[in-house]
Image (cartoon, rainbow, N blue to C red; front, side, top):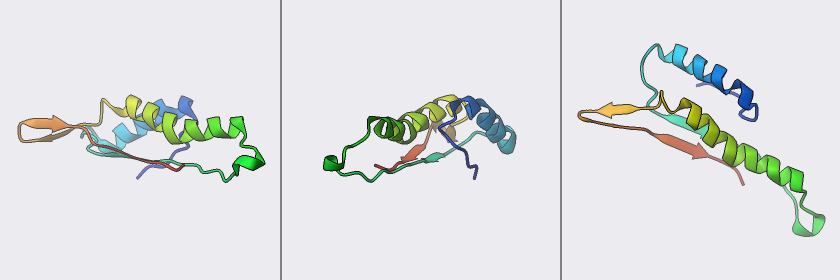
Length: 92
């Protein structure tokens, strides 16, 4: 298992290199993005736009971008067919 701060998109390539080195030429058969942030705010307290954008970046955008840069390694082959498995666990 590898852990990373997925808000730092500039470090994705380095993370992918670490994954590839760890796999030693084997394909990645499962990628689990267990990223998430939560904010507790009531509508009448005033939801902050910046906080909502940050939540969306961490919970939705970052896992998708990370999967995109890792996609070439993410492949599973069984018999005659190959597939990719991606699991996203987020927080709202």
